[in-house]
Length: 273
Image: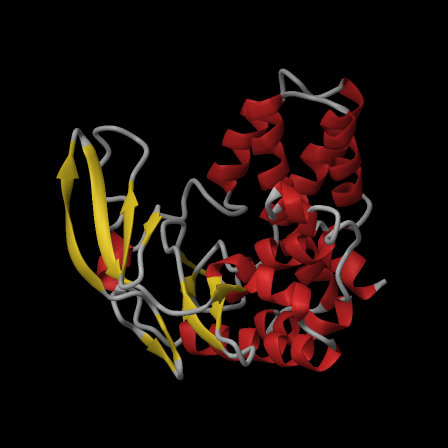
């Protein structure tokens, strides 16, 4: 990504891949109250790589701005996040939205991630992992599908000098799914923010962020689910994500801590503790 005073140029790092910026184009300039998506002004291919040019939205990435916020500004920022997501869910689902089949905690996705992770998983984890997967797969669908960003964390929100959210970015992972599936990324960010930020900021984010700030966001996304169902839904999302990471990186002490946290109750239980 190359950022100038007026324009932002994004280049797909994968050669000969097409369609990576389709949703950016379909959501070009979409307004969510006072928050806007980048307006696409050009696109094409160079050297086998797709590129996209958008108008630059002024602002600082939210996770950087957060470091200078006081308590009131942080509360306001989280309230704005809640409003942005509420408006996001009202956007008509584009025809080109990504297929959710191999993402989230669908039966297909969880089978894929389990196969990827099994060569690395200690034997003692196979039974509890498959048991949790079975519980998640037996949950009823209680919410109508909406547009789910799937990478909704402060780093994909732009904030002006007054702490007001001005833009929302990066739609490459967006799918149509139940609203509760949006919680996966923001909850993981609030519990483990250092996993999301640049190395120079890891020290600042060395502890979980204040949980009470995102309770409203969780309440909105969980409508229709009781606490047990909601906890299982979110645990399933986090499990699918963790199994994929184990399949990519193998097994180590950190993977064990993350996986055990999920089996002990996961992100939503952490929030309510």
